[in-house]
Image 1 (cartoon, rainbow over the protein chains, first blue to last red):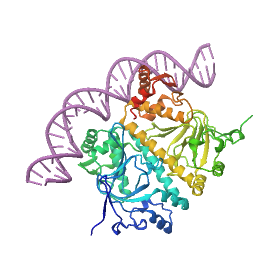
Image 2 (image 1 turned 135 degrees about the vertical axis):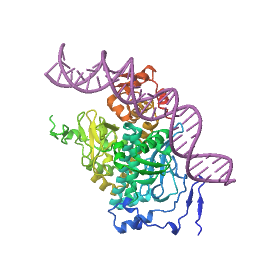
Image 3 (image 1 turned 30 degrees about the vertical axis):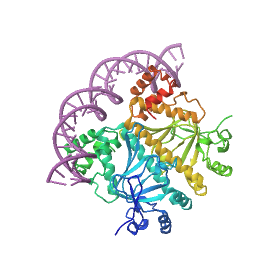
Image 4 (image 1 turned 180 degrees about the vertical axis):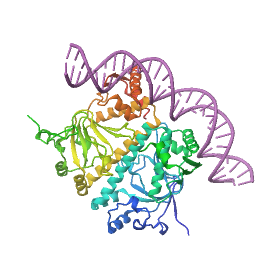
Length: 251
Length: 251
DNA sequence: GCACTACCTTGATATGAATCAAAGCTATAA
DNA sequence: TTATAGCTTTGATTCATATCAAGGTAGTGC
C-alpha cells in the first residue's frame, strides 16, 4: 500500500493522513498520559475532531524550527524528540527530550513563534493539536482548559528541576538524574524501568546536562565499574536502582 | 491612620484590605505589563472584581512556601520577590526574581501545590488572583485565557534561557546576562536602564546563577576594573552597556 | 564486502570556579 | 554611641570538568 508523501523542502516528510494513522484518543494506549482524565466520552470525541494525526516524522527531521510560526502543539505517540535552541555563537542547547504521551511545542505560545526547534531522534508518530482550535474548545470545556494550564505548569516545574540540576549537581548526579527520569517515564508507559535503549546520543545528553561528551562517557564508565549500570552503547541496564538514586541524591 | 494587621504565625503580616490598597487594574501604572491588552474596559472590571489587593508583604516574609496548597497566582505591584526551591540536602536554588508587573506562582498549577517558595526581598505590594476564579473567568473571556497561556509560556521560555545560561556560559557571562535582564525589565517600567539598586544579595545572585558568592563578587570587581560597571554595594551603574552585552555575548 | 562517517571511549593536561580562610563593611538593635 | 550579625571582598589553594589528542566501534551507503 502506498502512502502519499509530501516533501516539505526542509527534508522532513509529512505523510498525508490515511487510515493507517486513524488512531483515536478514545482508544489510544497513551490517553491516560496526555488526556485530561476528567473528560466525558463526548468531550473526547470533540477533542478527537480537532487533532490531526498526519505526522510520522523520520529520524533527524524537524517537526518545527526555532522562529517558525507557532500554530500547534504536538503529542508524541511513538518515538522520541529533542527540543533545542541554537545559541548566538552557534552552539546547541538541548532543552528537553519528549517521550510518548508527552506534549511538545508549548514554548511557542507566548510569541506565536517557536522558541526552540524540535527534531526526531528516531522515527516518531505525532498528534498535531492546532492551538487555535484548542483555545476555542477550552473555553467550552473547562476541564480541558484546566488540563492545559496543568500541562504548561508541569513544563515549568520540569524546567526548574533542570535548572537546579545544572546549577547544583555534579556530573554523576546529573547523569543519574536523567537516567532515573527516563526510567520513571518508561514505567508510566508500562515499559521496563531498568532496561532500555537511549534514543539520544552522548552528545545530546551532554548538551542537555551541560557537560561535554567525554564527561558523559566517563560517567557511564564509572557507573559501570561501580556495578550500578550495565552499559552497552545505547542499551542501558540499571543494575542497582537504589545505588543510582544514591548517586542522584534525590530523596 | 491604623491598618488592621493579621498575624499569620509564620512571621508574614497580611494587611487586611482597606481603601489604602484600592488600586484598580484600570488605573494601575503597570497594567500594560500584566494585563491582556485586548481586554475591553468592562472585562477589566470583571477581572478587577476577582483580584484581591490585600498583601503588602514585609521584607524576608514568605508569600507562600513550597508544599503549600496552591490557590492563587500573584501579580507584583511593587517591591521584588525571589522564588526558590530547597534541595534534598537543604541547599537553596533560586529559580527566579519577580519585579513589578510580573506574575509569580504559576508553577503551583500542575499539582495544586506550590512547587517553590516565594519570599519578599523588600516590602512588596501584591495583587492576589485566585486561580479558580481566573479559570472561571477565562472560559468566558477568551482573550484572558489566551493571555494566561501566554504568560505561562513566557515563564517556560524564561526558564529555558536560564537553562542555557547555566549550561553554556561562564561566570562573567551569567552575571552580565542577569544585569542586562534587570536593565530591560527596568526600562519596561520606565525606570533607568543603567542605574539601579539590586534588591537581592550576592548570595541570591550566586544561587540563581549557579555560582558561589565569592565568584559573583569577583565578577563585579572585574567588571568594575574593566570600567563596564560602577559598583557600590547594591547600587549598580552600567557604564558601558555595549561592553556588558559583549561580555554576555547575547547577539 | 569495504569505505566512510558519525559516535563513543580513554588518557594527559589545563583551567575556571569552588573551597578555605580572613578581614572589611553595613545595617540593625541595644 | 557601641555591639552584633550578616553581607561583601580579596587572596591562596584545590578540584572537577573542559580541552586536547588519539584510537576504537557501530551504523550506513556504495
